[in-house]
Image (cartoon, rainbow, N blue to C red; front, side, top):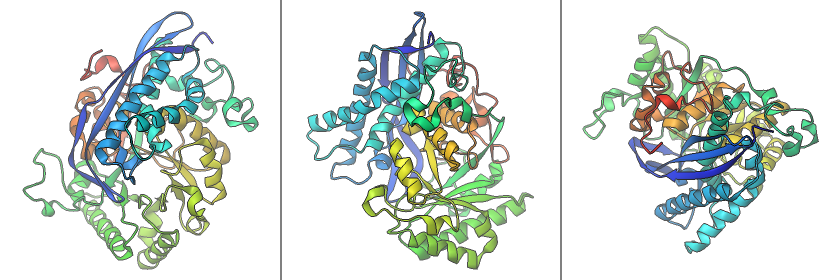
Length: 458
């Protein structure tokens, strides 16, 4: 295809992002981390060139949480892996669509990660999920540059006019004659947004202390609800203390009901996420049954539960059907390779969580798989701000998600949204609990980069 590209140069930047308030999920607390940006220059077969951008947190505490390697060393390994992945793309001379390039080069990703870990003398190699996170800002930049050099939005470039082969080349014969474009939808101007209630988050402004930030933004959930008239929430649970988790749900629901009543609305849904901390699916089954018995309305407003058990699907091969009979159960951390999808469906998971940090190319392929199989899917954001936020929202907006998209950077990393705030005001503050996506569009991923003052060189 004349639109096919090759990467001429890929340049990573690693500014540090500091959380406004600590972000707790599962057994970890995130306070600061590298916010990797990649600028990729590409050339198409006609000789035209353009530069695109991608941005993603290198969050080892999510992608590589259990390890004898220190947090500092894990972070260093991710930074170096990202650098070497950029060189991998630079050294690859063949042309292709970004998804094709990803598919061809992905078998090299883990070899590069192993080389980094060996060179650093680490006792183990980072998991493949972690390697995908390292690749994700680069993959996004390649997609963005592809759209810019060919004067097309990336979501309008997923059909036969721009792809040299159909999906059967990657996903198998069931996808003969089918393209990613077959599973995309026009983006709505407004998208439901999930607000995170983290494990350390305060539920009321009355809990505010002198140590909390005094920056004009809310601290308590009640004030967030008043500020943005929130309707969709994601509640982080311990997964190891049923009494605590039940009380947390009671407390969150009570604040939602009381605050919404005060501002004249009665319209909310929520999800629950233990981030792999449950010893078995039985924990969630018991939690759901107790919630249904104690508060049927709250139970009915619970949309789904996310990743209750550890990420290694083969370790116990847990049967998720007992949970799925009660509520959809969505796989997240366990989903990294395409073959993970088939095993998840075999084990009774209801659907999947897509994340831009698992690479734009991977998310589009997983969305195609799930759509074809009739499995519901969600879009989670790893709390990414800036260009990562724009990418994640745009991804969700072009797919038939179970419900909207998660968007946490307004709460935890608002300073890192500053450089996109003027161009995308509807993404950094919600209205009626929804994102306004009218600012997303144009060529590439839709950042409207010409209106953004990048903190790093053009």
